[in-house]
Length: 118
Length: 109
Figure 1: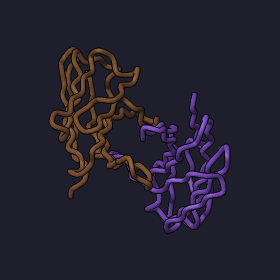
Figure 2: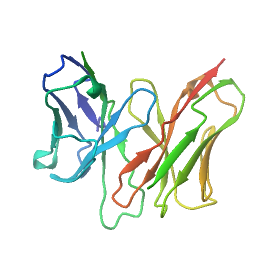
Figure 3: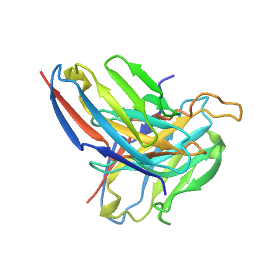
Figure 4: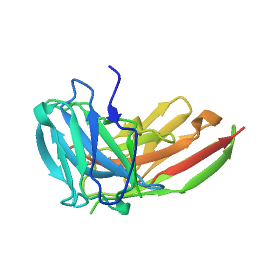
């Protein structure tokens, strides 16, 4: 397994444009998380899925943000009408969790997609 | 509301100079405290999970400890390859992580 893959790694866009990021999790992982990280800060939770169901969205996730995970495999994060404040690293992570899991829910992160909004 | 505070923000060490990073937390019920390492331009990489006060975990030159209010990451005789940002995080009952701002460590030869 190659780990969590994110695409594109870098995206430069003009204010007002739409952008979409893709995340391919580790194949047997049923949980998928999106985080956002700005310079000098730790990652901030945006949303997460268990299989194809989106279970929680952060208050940070405005109406311009939408995430999907069709068929419980890859996920996309779309930002509409980008603003300069959206410039950040968008991190995807996945994990395997079950009702009987005794070991910790360790999130495996991808390398991130860096967004620059001009 | 759960909170995670890391100190110092940055740490510059000479190779071989041991030191400790602090992660202070407030939480209604601890379900787990995680340490991650993050290299520039990469995602965080898992190091340790601690669950209860008194617990300790070790990996090479790193040792993590936990009390009821804070966790320490001790770096013993660091090498330049230990240079990274070290993040601590609390987990909730749904497996989400709440991260601190991190400590950037630079180890010079």
